Length: 335
Image 1 (cartoon, helix red, strand yellow):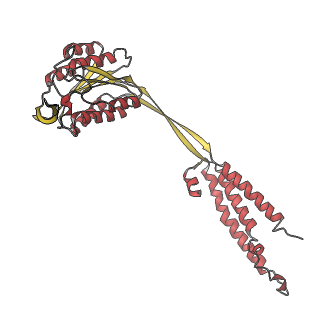
Image 2 (cartoon, one colour):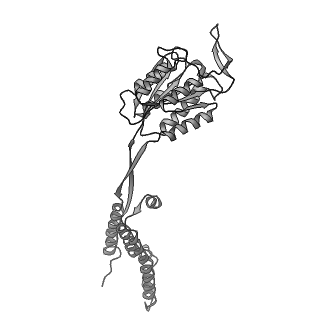
Image 3 (cartoon, rainbow, N blue to C red):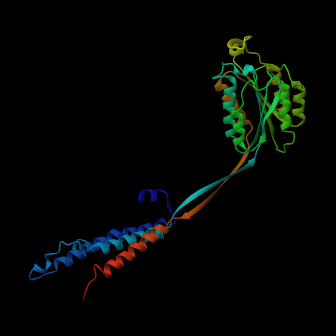
């Protein structure tokens, strides 16, 4: 118990603790004095001392021990033991970001572990957690687009919405233009100094109400930087396909990514195009984007102290009263 108490406190005036060196000095003096007193006591007979082994005799030094304990506690209390609690305030010029995620059927291909969609969700989650001062939103698209979570600083809600993303929720297809346009619309009213879209897809545009190039022009007009990521290995990938009889079968599907389109979108909006061929490369891409889009963060730590000397003072008072009681009753001396 004492060890736990000492481990949890620090001392405002640790130099006062040097006074504890007086304790063994006083104890040594007392032992020497008691020994001399005992040696000088001479009596003609020991008949009167047959009860010297009584409890009272054995405990005759207890008042002195209590006094030493009181002195130890008072010195420790004067050193002002205290504990502290640090409150961290993080402020900064955040960036408004929209994660634009392809959730089409081909994102279930298993050239990533366990598949492209789950791998993309995992690195997106890490990205969100690494940017506490940014407002981030989530747009998903397949044959159409949908705002899964508006741009928000409530990252707990955003993480919940990201976890709920599944393939097959939207009309199948790859509407890159619709996804980009919806993402740009989410940032239209943003007053942030920097606005970013991270668009991730594994295919070619084949649907939607707006084409990729008009959507790109909207992003340019709004001053939005677009980072594009093409996801998929080279060649063919094992992909779940719904057969004519309603059964899900695995089939080798060719990886088709419109890299020239993604490069154009990134280049003309001031962003950069990346190609992810594995889980590790996808993770590294998000890490690179994180480095390129750094936010200015100011961290202020406020330390609050709680005084912890009160228990020591109360125990010292209690022991002092006990010692006084014993001296005036059990160990009272008569002239």
